[in-house]
Length: 145
Image 1 (cartoon, helix red, strand yellow):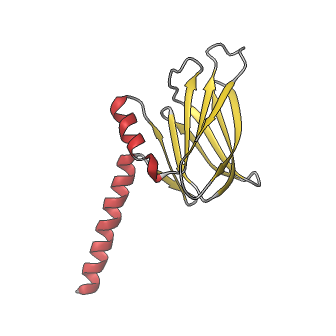
Image 2 (tube, one colour):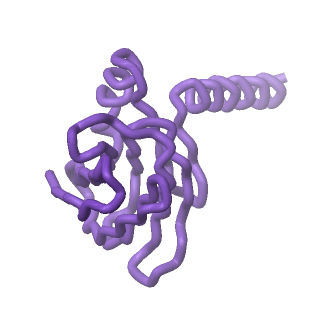
């Protein structure tokens, strides 16, 4: 009877944690947990309240500051192996990564920006990627910690 209760409890814990992950928008693939979003004030506040759980944050905007969604993110390790690809459904993309060097490629309306980032064990590394409103304009990029 204890074994059945243990199995049932384990199933309940898995179901609750899976529901929370789905409700929070977090995805785990290949051992990397990530989330994107932030469209609307409430969604942005909820996402930013959880940023302490991640060590990489990407912010996507136009040069003028308008937030962007539908940015395709590709994350590769130091050897160039693709770890994940995700279409960000908001201006924020956050990931929980092992310490190391990574290459981030972000594509919006056919224009790709690539950055090398060093992610440490502690703290949040933030990269702000900006696209011009006019596609013929040069990119403006800033990095923040």
